[in-house]
Image (cartoon, rainbow, N blue to C red; front, side):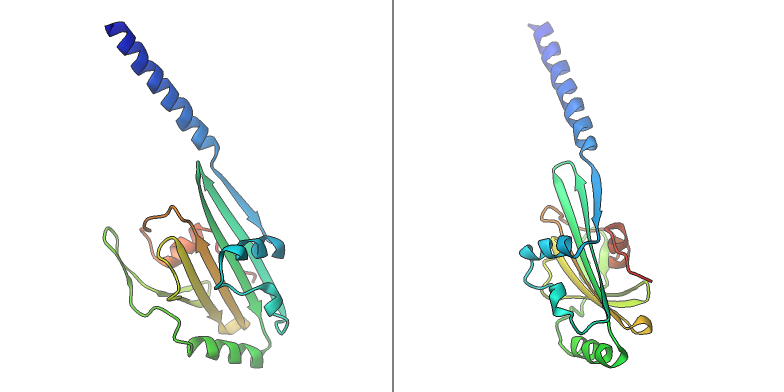
Length: 179
């Protein structure tokens, strides 16, 4: 009887080890710069703008960044639009006066306060009130130097908390902008 228990325990340990090694094989990162990949993600968001709304921009940049870790999946969607000076200032000023940004820091019990406005690669970002921290977060940023407005959406229904500032978090989850 004791021998059966030891064999059962050894088999359980072996099964757990195999399952764990399979999970580590399932870790992957996918990056797609196509407008189609960005638009595909819009099925899950009514907040983020569609690329066809940017007919008055000089150019747009899109990116979909996906991280798979075992059975968990995170997505980051980025759309950056560049405008001529007049249109840029009009759009930036409208965004800044919209009142749609969180002004208070997010209280993370094990980390501390996370600032809801921050700078990243010359962009001044704000965290949108419509966000559902930390599972679905929306950010909008502007960069005067290049007349660009950035829309960033992060989605991970399994994420329970973050332990870093938003600028570092976005860098880890695929932030990129054209020069």
